[in-house]
Length: 201
Image 1 (cartoon, rainbow, N blue to C red):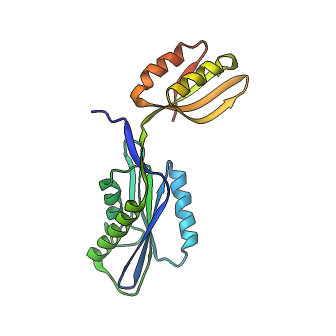
Image 2 (spheres, rainbow, N blue to C red):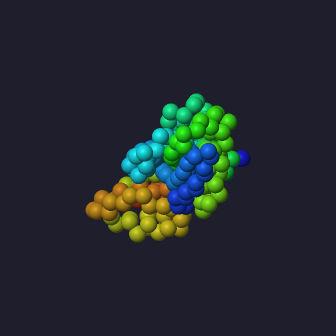
Image 3 (cartoon, helix red, strand yellow):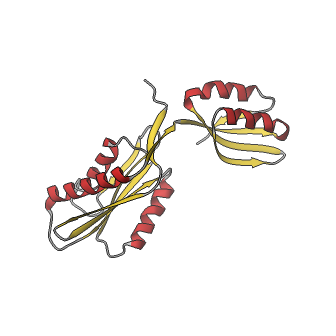
């Protein structure tokens, strides 16, 4: 059965967990691209320069196929994977969770680390506000200015998201139409005079 919605978080959320002197701070962010993930990570590293590890996991895209788990120097599988596991058990995508660790002098061992990363991530996700969004079919529309009002009317009716618009004599609009009814609206848009519809990346 095709799904038409996906679940993500609406705003950043944080949580803290301590174990034998070590401090773990989980930061969850809604993200849409690899660039956003990179800048969130860089900012956190600047905010916490004395932290020994910045472990993270993310899942991107409505099909959830783009994901990564990074242990950042912790024993293999003890940090990134437990973080990703919590993201998945919450059924979220378009999300990044970074856990910043300050070492407290006592080694926690792999079970202790898995527990810490799992617990602090679960706490941050429990605090985060989630939302369900429509899975969209992203397209680029190219058309002449005279048909703009008809194009915009159809996009409004379709509850489309406008990502970019360049409305000159020749107009280009990058938009996303909820997949649940995209076929019908794409047909109506392509029937308009001189409207070119192409899939967008």
